Amino acid sequence: MRWHSKRNCLILVFLSGACVISRVEPALPSLTESTIHPIATLDTADIAAIDTQIYPRVDGSTSAYPLQITIACEILHVECAWTEGDFFNATRRIAPVDPLSASEAIETIFNLVHSGTHSAYVNLIEKKVDLILVARGPSEDELDAAKRMRVSLDLQTVALDAFVFLVHADNPVQSLTLDQIRAIYTGRITNWSEVGGPDADIHTYQRNRNSGSQELMQKLVMLGEPMLESPDMVLMSMMGPFSALREDPLGIGYSVYFYTANIFPDEKVRMVSVEGVEPTSETIAARSYPLVTDVYDVVRGGEAGDQTARKLRDWLLTGKGQQAVEASGYVGWHE
Image (tube, helix red, strand yellow):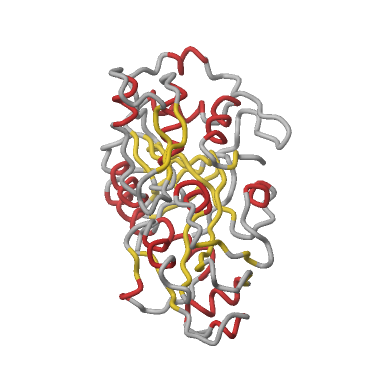
């Protein structure tokens, strides 16, 4: 299934047992690189009315959690900032500046949870939440689940990210082509010397099925080619590749740029260039990096749903909403 990188809503509609993607043409001005136009029909009072009592039920990808927190901080008028975490002194998170304040807004923010990409889609399909922020479109398993539940999924691009490849900081390989990466992960290339590295076996770390990273790997890079079957190399969390690679100079793994650059910056793990282009905020914004990806907000389509959630997703495409996106560290959406 091909996904189009457009900010226009993508609605998955299930007709006669088949999944059809229809594109909804935008009724409002689109973003440009130089100007962000507010959505003209959105009453700012609608967003101002979202408080702790009616804040929508949300979920999402692990990597998109800081964006979710930034949105809540903006809507609920709570000052938030990046703070250092405690995993290898490397992880970072966005949190209220005054976390001990006994306010309902602080409590609401700390109660926001992201269960991971797959679980978020499942929770949305099962109507346990009303809006999710995710770093990929739905997998085939998630589409099948939506079909069984007779639920459609309405996706809207709100930010840009990128799929990146990781190695130990001491690995001399600086850049790989997509063909080389596919060859590594199918087993056609097994030694680092074949791509300009040391004469040593390549340790190919993977992610688990239905994880955001694994789905992106399959759709953007492998393009239908089967990956090596290496169950002992499958890592079950986003932090897994970093934990493995910081101890393995011969390993290669993958993740998304936002998580790597903002949540888990690690001096022992670095990103490699792909097709000679380094992943940076600038190359992502310019789309010169070859593996730029969309970050979506998703609601259920074809039903009234939670109107508060829909007001929030509309706000994300306004000037203020895109400012919140960029304040979280993501690259804003530009046509």
